[in-house]
Length: 165
Ligand SMILES: [Zn+2]
Image (tube, rainbow, N blue to C red; front, side, top):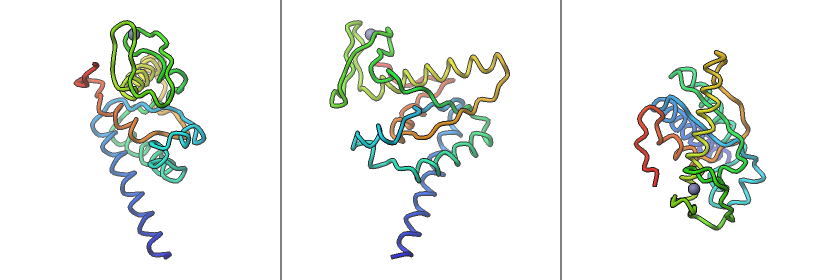
């Protein structure tokens, strides 16, 4: 029983390390929502990949690899990241079960993609503001949604090859 537990912990650590390394190595800017555990577990799709231990592990590795690869890591306020249209900025109200973002401006995409673009845009604002004041780029946070972060991470800042629609 104890051995099995140790094995799970080791795998969890390896996963966190690998994910953090890839995210930092291949992106100059990494953005994530500063979400609370309480809000995350309401969404069972996210909850299964997220818990306190996994997140604190991931945070540690993220900071480690951010320093190693000179990656800017920014935690952004999750307020309105899902509701806001990433194209025109309009607020498009949707419940958690609404999976598609559909705006009157014609913008239509998967809700997490829309949110990921908003998160990245917010992070860019933070980064650009900080580069003017020469502050360090590493922000702090308490939780991340792994799948959301992976989506954000895929949208490389220097070469945005992510389909916007
Ligand atoms: Zn719109």
